[in-house]
Length: 249
Image (cartoon, rainbow, N blue to C red; front, side):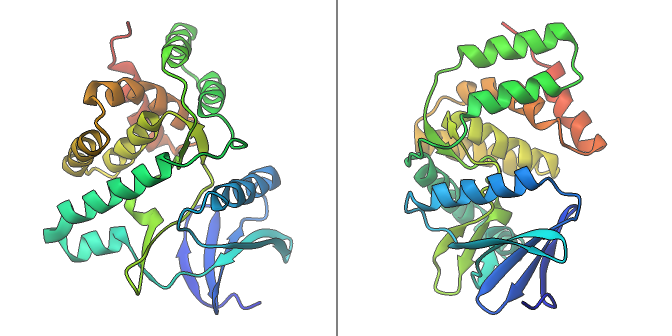
């Protein structure tokens, strides 16, 4: 197995290409449970028939866990957006269509989104009153069982050389309310300082899914709080601002 062609690198993992295989190598101290859960999520969503790289195996390389999957040759939607800013609206439309195709699928064994968010809210350092309000709001939201990607953004969409879009990185996949997934995508754009793109995405999603914008916005403080747990200090403060500025009902 060759680890000489780096595709991408992030805080706790490095992606390599070895022929037609993609090797996601995690840091030595990365949680084994999280690695195996990511692989399990990938396998379960792959069974829905969505267009995504095939999962091959989970192995250990020099004491580090690795997930090996199919390598897709192409460019991410983020790269294409940067290269062709004049096509931003077209790419956003494609992105929303792909996200809606995910939401149309079902995978009954995935973790429930509400359960995961309740756990995350409990882990925050927010005061007890705010945590109570967030738990209460979450409990009052409609229960759905749609597949939610959990990290749906242009860098997790690869457009292959023949134009086929593949969705990657299913580490945060759950089943639940699609509006929560949309709220997460909105926050991801906002975290990168792309407020204009975030707003354009929100409008496109709500129009194509026939969802009230206020309904997605109602999820923002819940999603922001649950996502603040593992973020870096700057991200955490940004996300918690979304929680603190909301007037709870």
